[in-house]
Length: 112
Length: 414
Image (cartoon, rainbow over all chains, first blue to last red):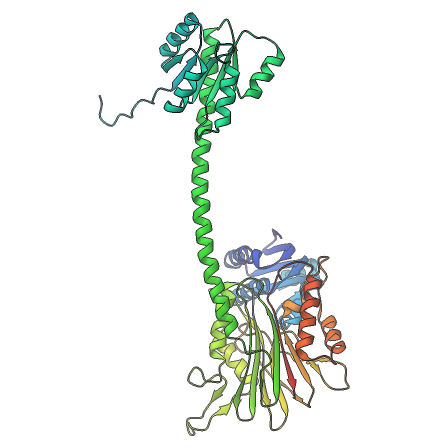
């Protein structure tokens, strides 16, 4: 999987692509933690290019979600159909804030 | 001598094989002048004996000699496949390509032509020394790598043995396939993706007219997930000496055990197993309580794939209810779904290792395919259904081993 970090004003963006599974979890978890700790409480995880996701990857998203709640800040997700379906299967869409695409997510965070 | 001064490097010993006395003496003197330890002989038989006795690593040999040519010496040395490398320079009058090829095929490393230019000889010896030095380093590294590899293999063996023992322990926690309680029979399928699984399930009587069952999938797979599943398996025990998660009593009536409802069991676990910085492993689960007097199943679902319910004369259907996985947010709300059961009904609980099992093309097995399978195999015995599903999933996967743990628990009403 590829991890790409970008910054848009005070919003941190992490673009993930490829398969997001157990082997990638520690690195993504660490990168998200640093961004949450050092950022402005505005983070977008763009998974529109993620082709497969497993439960360990979901655990990383939940950990980031909880970290952001403590900060406090906002974590927005952009999902691909595969990611969305796993998130819905585990009912996590009821707690995550999910936006249809990156511009919409940036828009939501810049006005907040 | 100054104390602690490093010892000067040991002089390299070079064997000269030359039948011409004048040439031999000239070479001996030059090599000694350049700081080498020199031995010399005039035939290859004596040369071979010295190479073996003194472990000679550097030889300069004449090509044409009575009693055997330098090329024969090369061949003999190479054939013996000695534990040390011997660098050989052939000295020759011959000046054609075929001779060079012959010499190299015999095993010579380098050539020098007569009449010998001393500067050239010295340069070629130094080149040979560099190669021997590299060879020595390579050999030392090989020894180190072999040692390291042996250590790793030994360590791996220990880990594997431990994992196998733990895997056997994990299997021993599972209910007996084909067992039954109060008219409910069970069977199951279990394939950890590695030795240990983050999946676990069980089925047990709670009292004379209640039976409990659960299936749990701890996020991830492997050791950390398995450790979590071991803990949960101990906690979710109907034995009140181990835990009061499933059966409890009120302070005012300590001798009157009560069966805890499915949502209450999960809500308690959710309070107890909130994920945090050091433990991010949430789990999905289904817990169910069967009341064998009122013939009802109450089950609560926490982020787990929807179970399939197969009733006589009806298509298999998903039991839909909404609950977050355990450990996500501490005030999560859990509710139960009630099923009225009849003889012959079957309930299938499974982990996402089945529904998300990928074919070689990356297509997931999916829940709908599983539903159709359950429907189509309704006339078969449960053990046969499980055997066929195992075959089906394995052929869907198309290669050995699964990416995620696979578990399936089937309950059948007798």
